Length: 184
Image (cartoon, rainbow, N blue to C red):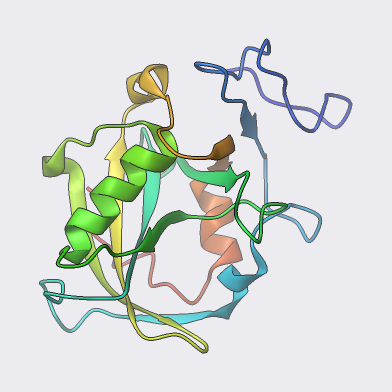
């Protein structure tokens, strides 16, 4: 995969080699203070891993989509055109529909935001994410394959996607216990 450089366009066009089905895919070599990542990510304070199963109900469900190698791969983040934080990239997730289990919320949100139909054998519940000012949020991970990127066709209002090295995600969100998370 070709990577963006400092001299390349910060937002690839639909004709760029990063685009799939008209959705630009951007690549960040690392997360810096200038990377347009949702500032709410910095409010994550930890992960409660005491329960091995997600709760039956939750207002939200979020997840980390990891492409290729679960140790050294890349995190996928997205940017919605209608989101109040539309100038920022976010991890996948959202509000649960009535009667929806958190795992169903995560699965639906990944499909809506990326167009990827998940292989449920590659979904892992990680625990309850602690975020300042919000109720605990079930956190999942999904191990996508680079071939999944060929099927990207968001159902909802995703404006663009970005891939960030997993090492940068770990550095940006040190409050998550990355070394003990079961990513595959």
